[in-house]
Length: 119
Ligand code: HEC
Image (cartoon, rainbow, N blue to C red; front, side, top):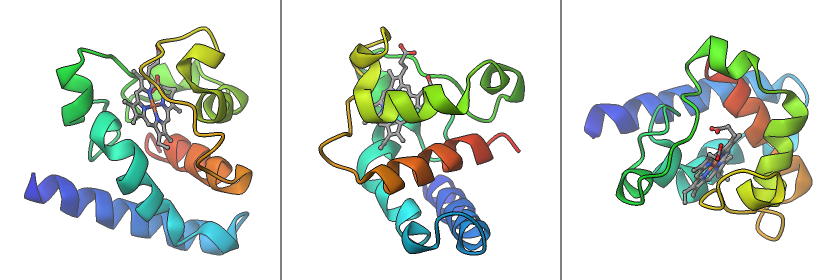
């Protein structure tokens, strides 16, 4: 667990610095905090879909480190499922909708983060 957290935090900080010089400067530092707060429990410390909560409910999400699997998903789909939830895009309702909890630019930054995991 300890090393997992370390990896996530390191990864998210690296991402934050990439984002800081690109599209979403205002939310760059927030991405890591947002991920930890909302997503880690299901998507896991490295985005592999092995979070404790997801294991408990036997849900299955894509391993974001898998380039081939991620290549099948469009950027639009990633943002859509974050905002509308699994139920909103005809997928598992275990994936919650974050429309009410996140600003659109935060959701966009998280979608970019999800995409960056496989690179
Ligand atoms: C309660 C568990 C849970 C939480 C919390 C959660 N997700 Fe998910 N998520 C899922 C499940 C399950 C799927 C798979 C849906 C499907 O394909 O049927 C999923 C799918 C996704 C996908 C589509 C690619 C994939 O992995 O299948 C993205 C992108 C995503 N989630 C992002 C997020 C983000 C960002 C957050 C935090 C803001 C988050 N999720 C929080 C359970 C969760």
